[in-house]
Image (cartoon, rainbow, N blue to C red; front, side, top):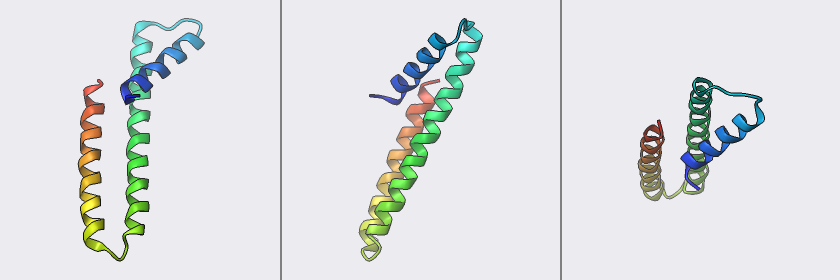
Length: 85
C-alpha cells in the first residue's frame, strides 16, 4: 500500500468520524496526515539504517554502501511524499 493511499484512508476515516467537515477542513486534515506519514516513514528509515549499521560495524565498506543506498531510498521517499501534495 502506497503512503498516499495510507494518508487518504486516514483522512477519509477522520472525516467519517467527524459530524461534518468542510472542504477547507478536509484539506487541512490531509496536510496534517501527510506530514505525519512522512515523518513516520523518515523515522522508520533512520531507525533501520542505525540497526543495519550496527550489524555491519566491522565491515565498514558494506556499511557505507548500505548507508548510501538507504539515503537514496529516503530521498526517493521524500520526493514521492512531496508529490502527494
